[in-house]
Length: 217
View 1 (cartoon, rainbow, N blue to C red):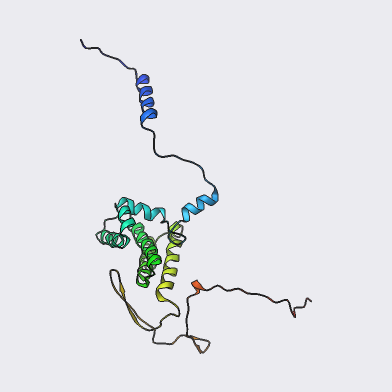
View 2 (view 1 turned 30 degrees about the vertical axis):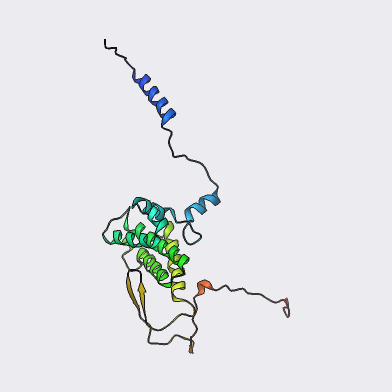
C-alpha cells in the first residue's frame, strides 16, 4: 500500500526554513564595528604588523598557498611568482603583484635580507606601474596604492642601507640579478658635493625653539 502525502507550497517552504534553522546555520555573521576598528581592519598590512592585508590573504587562500606560507614562506613567494608569470591569477594581476610585494616585504623584515627588501621594492614598483598609460595604472583611490608606495619606500630604504652606496651595483635577487647604474655626475647642491647620503625614511627631526633672546614687538 502506497500512502501519498501532499504538501502545499507554504508547508514546504515552512519545513525548509525549519530545516535550515535547525541544521544548516550560516557560518557568516555580520556585526557593526567602531570607526577606529574599521580603519585598522582596512589598513592592515605587513607595514604595521605581522598580519597580512585582506587582499594578500585572499590571494594565498584562492591559490591554495595559505598553509604553505605558514610552513615555507620562501617557497610560497617563488610559487606565487611562477603562477603570476603563467598568468594564473586568483583575481587579477594587480592583486597578485601587491601580494608578492607584501609577502616579500614581510619575509625581508623577518630575515633582514637586503636582497629580499629589493625584491619587495621591485614588486611594489611593478604594481604601481608609473610609466604605463593611466588606464593601466592602479587608481589613487585604491586602498593599496598608498601601501604600495610605502612598501616601495621602506623596502628600498632597507635595501640600499645607510649611507647609500652611489657606485654601480649588481644584486642577486631570489629570482635573478639586478644591475643598478650610478650617475657619473657627482651630486651637487648649490656648488657643494653631497656625500654620506642617508634615506629620510629613518630620520626623525625635532625642532626646539629657545625662548632666550626672543622679544615681542
